Image (cartoon, rainbow, N blue to C red; front, side):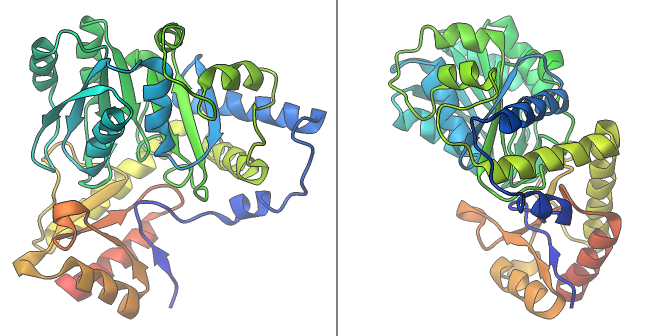
Amino acid sequence: MKSNFRLPGPTAVPPQVYDAMQREMVPHRGAEFVAFYRSMLERLQRIHKTESDVLVWPGSGSAGWEIAITNFLSPGDETVALVAGEFGDRFALVAGKLGVVAHRVELPWGSAFHPEILATALGAHPGAKAVCLTHNETSTGVTHPIGELAAVARERVMLTFVDGVSSVAGIPVDFDGWDIDYMMSGSQKAWMCPPGVTIAAIGPRAWDAYERSTFPKFFWDAGPMREMSAQGITPTTPPVSLDYALDTAAQMIEAEGLEHVFARHADLGAQTRAGIEALGLELVAEPGFESNTVTAVQMPGGLSAKLAAQRLLDEHGVTVATGQSHLADRIIRIGHMGWVDSEDMDNCLAAVKAVLG
């Protein structure tokens, strides 16, 4: 039975990416690595559609929250955090734990944030210096309209911090066009790589704020990372093999064509949703804001999501995720990002039909 790995992260890794990780080790301050690293960062800039810095740290995508807070804010600063799922909640939680006042604006999980909701929230908190946004909420399969939300924040001259962990490289991102200040992602999602790399795009206003930040920082300090990355090196030893993997995946994305990658993900998202709805099952996401990288499906008739996921694996070789927090046993989440095609989704949907249909 062929495995069909449909987690919304980590995702399936192409053979080319695994092969890249088998390359011999090189000095991470030597000429070969310097040339490679500079080329990789330029490739990442193109995928983010930005002329601004794109920096790479070893770590989970979750590190990106801490990088944003500690580099571009100071203790006691206020933020507005939009929460309609597990990862929006975690962004707010990290801000609070680090000593920033996070004004939470909460919607039921599965809802999308509309610009007028953010405008009202920002009006209620005129002292806030940043807004924490989640582009694609992996826990609910909702894609929030980041371009529109960022425009509202820009009117208030606020920094925009965007969690793009399950959107970048799978869903259209226009860092410069949207005029956002910070966007982070993780290698284990649409980037098609093993976990272990945090990618962060950082704009000019964020760098201005960096000069005013009083948070203590060392490993996540973006200043030295920026300065040394421009030279093709890093402040600490980089994850060389994972960097090779990331660069190879980025080359694959560019070879396919960025717009084609986005169209493929849109087709896969539509295929998945149509298949689920044909079974009479309900989606978690608000209509019109469904994600093209992950689909969250409500369990029918009180069926256990954990039991359904186990049957999908045991009987059909299909790996899916269950829900998180209060949705832990009430939904399954199907990933369709990165290295995946329509045949994979046909097989996945056939398995879902056998178990839930």
